Amino acid sequence: MTDMLVKLYNLPPLDPEIEAQRAHGITIRRPLGAEKHFVIDWIRAEFGDYWASETDVCFAHQPISCFIAKDNAVIGFGCYDATAKGFFGPTGVGEAARGKGTGRALLIACMHALKWEGYGYAIIGGVGPKEFYAKGVGAVEIPDSTPGMYADMLHADNDEDDDDAE
Image (cartoon, rainbow, N blue to C red):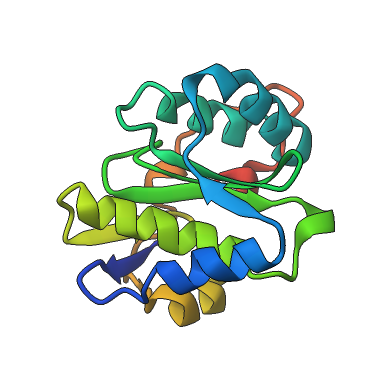
């Protein structure tokens, strides 16, 4: 899967995304350190160990380099600076909560955070839905970026699917 590049100086505004989520009863925010186990456990259950491990790294950063979407509980997450500096991901929205623009709001929140922290560009590693990122933040494919930084990743003996990374 290819990587994509995002110009952080040309992002859509964040406030309308946050307001649209509020209209659905969803809050987008950084988790607190005390919420780490709730967030990591939810990600592990919904998306697996790889994404839970990457998200765990985000809690060591100040500020925490993760955003969550929540109603009464976690329904989605987006991370940056997890696998490498300037990288976005992993990110996901629980199946039952999809279709409300929550993934887009998390993406844009993370991109703005990267910009606020001084980056000019962001990399989305091992992209699945290219059109989503192109439409959402103007991401473009990086030529010759496959297999990318996930090429030599460790796998459990019974884990034959290495496509779970980003």
